[in-house]
Image (tube, rainbow, N blue to C red; front, side, top):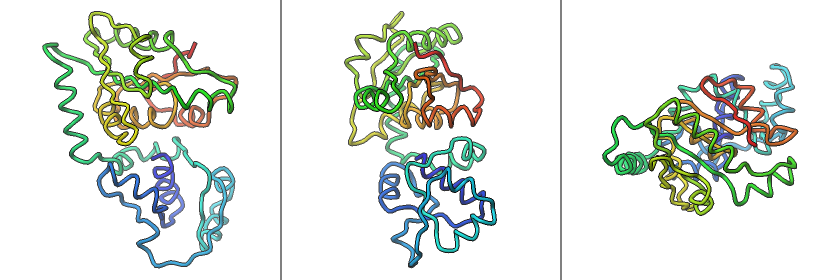
Length: 261
């Protein structure tokens, strides 16, 4: 999703024609309505692609970018620039509209979770663990945030919205049940951990009014599609992750970093 949004914004900025890799197109169209960027297999073109990463490409001036684009540019790596696509937020949101079944399932689940509560403010909580532990340690000499961070973030929303109901989704629901302590039954563990169908959890989190996330693209997009206030973990390492840096650069209103520890 980050690659798609960045490609869309790059093409708009530079007046170029964007083309998706077919695997990206195939993945996105499982969960979202038809995207506006075509896949390469639908086009009859035989360009010789110039491969470069996003940082190198952005250092070129407009004339250089236009000249090299004549032969086609392949942006390699995992190009994501929140500051670049956030200025087109309204249009980007139209690119990521969940298919009907995911929207209906999310709304039905929130209705079920509401029960007899009045004036509920849903706060989605995404807890990324498992595979991310080794990534943080190896790449940034950092560790996963724990109970202290999530309690701090939840208490913030409890104070601001006394009728908050925290809707938790995670790849480690056992950890969540052991460490995210409810007050007056205000925490529900609704995530399904179905990695084969991640759109179910993302659509559920995006349907909430506000969001608490730890790190990672799944949490970012769950919060970004949802709108509202967002709390995310900061100061988890001496060097910010690429995504953290990109989010800070975008200066998104109603997003704030809380200390991770």
